[in-house]
Length: 374
Image 1 (cartoon, rainbow, N blue to C red):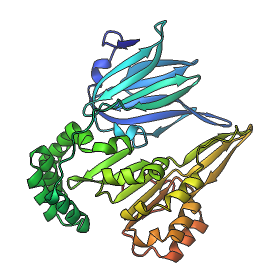
Image 2: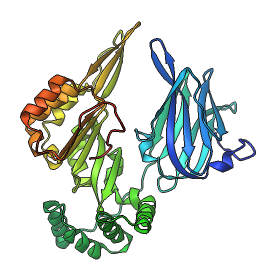
Image 3: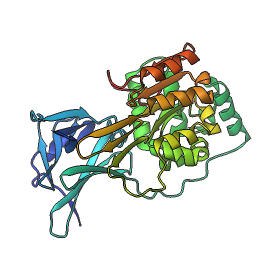
Image 4: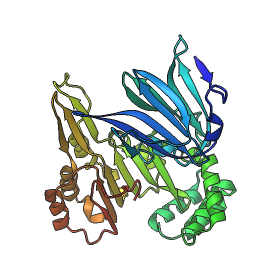
């Protein structure tokens, strides 16, 4: 059943109102790997909500400050899926899911500006994280017409020119048109007032303006009024590339996720699930890939857990080889391959094919926060 927690039930809950600043995961290190046992939700207004698994039960508490024990390590997951959609949003409320005996089974968090629910629960001694997207009502048919299509084509043909964007904004009017004008001005000069207005517009309408992309992409970013950067699960893009492109016709930056696989040995029976290298093969055969001039690949690897060790097969070099072989590299303006253990062989393949035309390159696994969007 559902049960809303109150301040009296959990002291310090009243301090959590405000903006979610970061989410930290505390990993308990074992000889054969590590387990995420605690998630800490840090709110800018003060207070940290702690979700911890103890003896298979989910325990919740509020602390003014989080200090990690010596045998645990902390890493920021605020910019990683699924939390990247929530960090920076204003916290609205949270509830707990209880068993029929009244025990806490999971915690669900809600944020202003989105109907998506983030849930943290326990499965044995390990935390699980899930995101639930409620069924959305049918979208109103997008306004169409020769003039609208003509302007969108003009924007795509000259993506660095603000003129067709501002003409489109005048035609659209309202707050949708205002976002275009505000972001175009911010692209040329920072303005705290306009930046606050941008956040307000996107908090209230961003999910709605994303349209059909809501059910296809993990994340997206509005630039100068339109979605120009998207983050998509690789298998989703392989299957629904046409729908993704139709939902974000002006997108230029594509971040590919979902290329990490975990295999427990002895291996279970074969499934229909595509392996990362098979997904990559299909991905680079798609004509829709040519629409993007900025590509980022995150966490492409397969980890096989044996009884006494973990065997890692990284796919950074495979991505590099397919970039070169497909000809995609030639028309890119920016490229990132991160968390995929790109080796000297992969770097050499990229370098000998020419990287001088790229405006931005990120080819490393550590050393700072990797770019979410290029």
